[in-house]
Image (cartoon, rainbow, N blue to C red; front, side, top):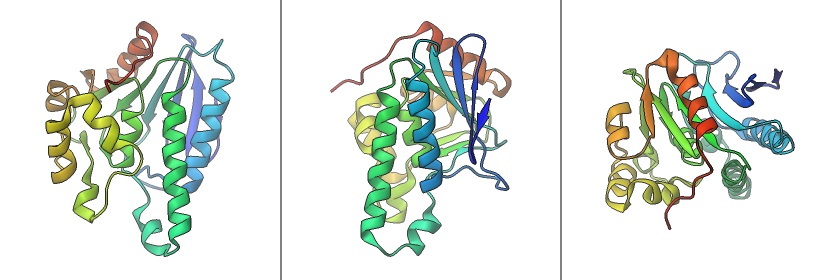
Length: 213
């Protein structure tokens, strides 16, 4: 197992790599520049081990939050549009790199997956949501006067269709596990104690997927 500051990497005996988000001294996982840097480093390392790594699962160690999205406090404090633009571009590039990995990927979503938290899941080939009241998936950016900037506004319509995607993006509507499965936002649901195993099963039995144009 390897760990930097916010993300642990473990390779299971099955050949499935697991990236566990666990921000120290915080109840929530968020995306800031150090976390994006760590994620990018892990993805580069895993891509270089494609012969040994058969798939990747992304999960959270937090009891009620998968990833809560971007560090909005950091965005608010930073008034430099160039730095904000670079962070947006970094997130886009990192999530695109995730989507281009040479082996199947899955998000094991337990708890809140909002904004960037859902966008990283959308960059994966598969998504499994836990059957827990805490699990909610959404893109609430428009409620804050901004738009999803890390691929959500393009990947979501290609996954669930334009009408359903527009409803989620324009209203900030959040989906629980079973409704998310019904509209095709996730590929499976499982109880929290089984979610990692189900996500690992999908990447081992599945293939890389291409979203419809």
